[in-house]
Length: 93
Image (cartoon, rainbow, N blue to C red):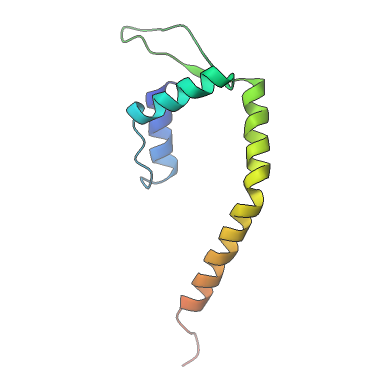
């Protein structure tokens, strides 16, 4: 995907909660490329569109990061569930 396509996907998947733009996605793509987590294809098309692809190293990095963050996310979801339970309207009069 190109940086623009990634930004659009972020907006779509987050239902507009995250306002990603190509301008703030590309710097991250460049860092990921320098780290070896993505590779950039050759520019194509009239506007020199560059398509990025995750590498095997990038997949490992993503998996490791997800595993590392799992306890944090699980704790956050528990807190959210607790808040929702406490603030839900009572079903008994």
